[in-house]
Amino acid sequence: MPRPIWTGSLSFGLLNVPVSLMSGERRMDLSFRMLDSRDKKPIRYERVNADTGEEVPWKDIVKAFEYDKGSYVVIEKEDIAAAAPETHESIDVEAFVDADSIDLRYYEKPYILIPGKKAEKGYVLLRETLKDTGKVGIGRVVIRTREYICAVMPEEDALVMILLRYPQELVALDEYKLPKGSAKDYRVAPKELEMARKLIESMTSDWDPAEYQDEFRERLSDIIKKRMKQAGATTKFEEPEHHEDAATNVVDFMALLQKSLDSNRRTPAKASKAAKKSAPAKKATKKAAAKKAPTKKAATKARKRA
Image 1 (cartoon, rainbow, N blue to C red):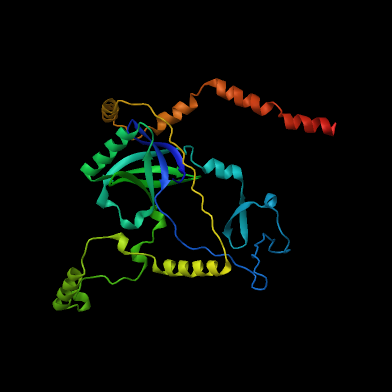
Image 2: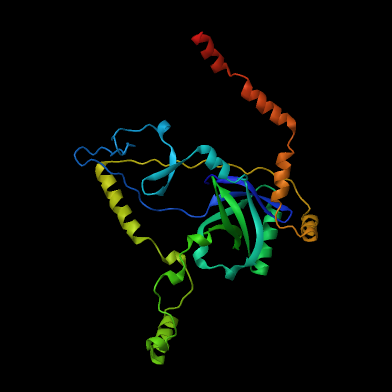
């Protein structure tokens, strides 16, 4: 079983359901390396200065934004860290909307939410309620360092989280020259519409994704296997490690649901931030002491220098 991207919680109202975020897609693209045709050695890419042609070590490379052609402003690591969201281990559902109200162009990438131990009840509660109401949860999630908006929806026995594109990431339809108006405006005859309708009806069937395969990839895979066999190559596959989810406590869902309704709260994000701020002072003291105290390696180096 693949490793989770992160393990945290799915929160709505005052309810928190411990979950693991797992990838919902499997990229099947075949990747290639470029080789020197003369000796079949890999081609290496180097980081070079555009003016001098000299290789630049990683320690001397900085990130910059080109605000005008040839004009840059350097962005420090501290700047990026300051802009990054605080929370990295929660999906905060802020609202519920009708599933059919979301434009298909907003959907980007799927993930599967796996309930933690003893979290099945809250997981099923949300899943079945979304099925009954035809709603989708809209929230925010941080993956690595970027914050996304996302949709949480039921799919058979699973809760699926799909990343959504921001409005500014979509190209407005009116930016392109599209044929506006009705069929009559383009001299489409009623008989042509009827024939097109009958053709669509004759080709209508149930959606079965198993009927559609990447035939190009399959043919190319067969060619690669033949070449490997000719070259006498062998392959070895290792199963990824399986990581168990953290155990969680049983909670009173009825009480939490009633509190959420009474307080009309949508997300416990503020509460979680306050909890972090009120962490015991002992941890902070230990961290500060750890930073000040020199390590054994540092002390040894200091003695050698002396």
